[in-house]
Image 1 (tube, rainbow, N blue to C red):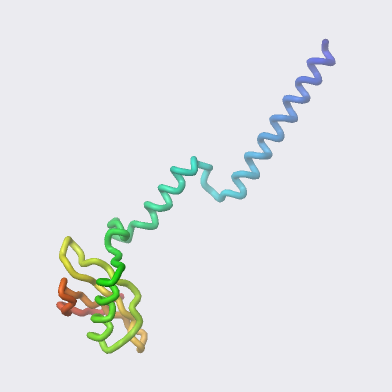
Image 2 (cartoon, rainbow, N blue to C red; image 1 turned 180 degrees about the horizontal axis):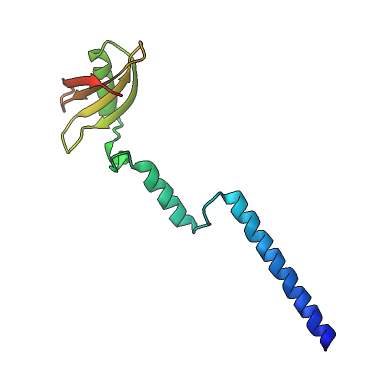
Length: 126
């Protein structure tokens, strides 16, 4: 009976060592944070990437589609050319766009357009 108990204890110890080793390997390959359910981790990553520095949701700010393309063209023409970096919907519920452009000289400018794509303001963008 003692031999049978000794065998069971050895088997349990082996299983425990393998389990601890598996956990150690899993944590080493997943980074510094403990593992979370897939849905929770994906949701946290999505929320982090969608928030800008002021805590606002960038997905709500980003503009796309034909109107955004037209806004980009209007803003680029207004400042004499350059590379459009970003087109956003206007802040605070205003209708229109904010377009960030990198000029050929390397400076940055933000062009604010109204809903009819007329320039209402321009300013340097840091």
